[in-house]
Length: 125
Image (tube, rainbow, N blue to C red):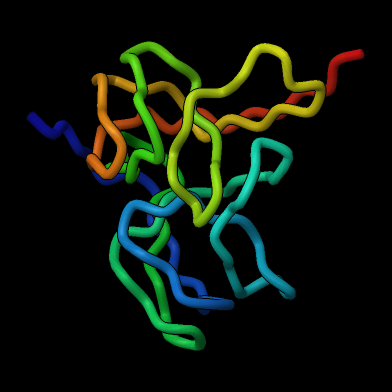
């Protein structure tokens, strides 16, 4: 069961190939996005469709988005970006952490799963 609600959606230029459900962050300028690659990136939203480099891509920045899983996710986990923008569970051990939001359902690698977007970042000692 996928639970999705559209919230704030903004169009950006894709700074590289982007797939539907990828967690994205700002690219080289104010109007571009690229896929996130690690929990230390600062996400801004989730790609709503595939886009080639230089094409427009709609990015969901609030609401409940469908994120592509990069591993096993348990509902309730904070979700961050892994390689290629896939959603992974945020590690409590990381010293620099950024979360796109909270998983609303459990998922296996490759699944699209609902995430309540609630972007936050923290640095711990």
